[in-house]
Image 1: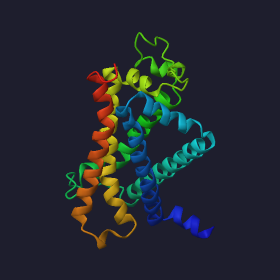
Image 2 (image 1 turned 45 degrees about the horizontal axis):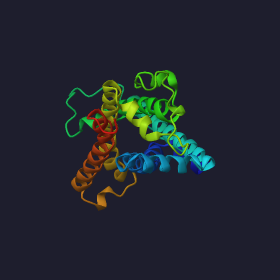
Image 3 (image 1 turned 180 degrees about the vertical axis):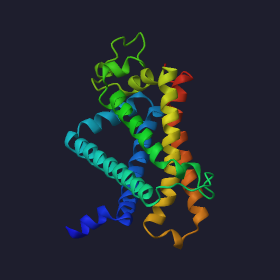
Image 4 (image 1 turned 90 degrees about the vertical axis):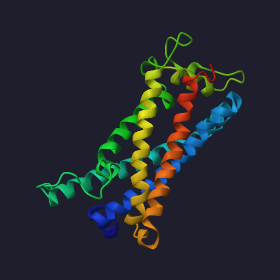
Length: 237
């Protein structure tokens, strides 16, 4: 118990928590993207995939609760570290240019909180499918915005049509693309810095890790953004 308390109280412990939760959350982002990209394989494929996930409610809720815990630990550690840093240096540096620090690294806390707001909207939009939230993305085909009433020929929830309707609105798609850009900016620094937090960065080429982080972030941005962009261009409609 003392070890756990020290882990949560020390700066090094908080950085370690951020690194470990960051790795797990990054893995979820990759899996989630691969699942969503099945929309390009057709309605039957992505609807069958969604039906399989919903057929395992216990596993699905364990995963959801686990993700909430990971997000809470990640953001909580970031906020506490930010407070400790400010308390240690109440008077800011005179040079506001922050030499050697990237924009992503200087705005990690802010981008993380914005990404949290984006995640909440995403959950309300597609996972919980709150009709009031979905009215903005709904068309004349679904005036009440209730995505859960959409069914395919097999009786499964029509996730394909839900995504098409949801992203047919340019403002909704634009918000997702901006949110994804912020997420990937957050990831580009986070992926690189987690090696340093775990104490293994010195064993590898720092520049190589930075480039790898930027490449992975770019892949995630392109993969996730390709869905709303394709739908805006007419895919699935």
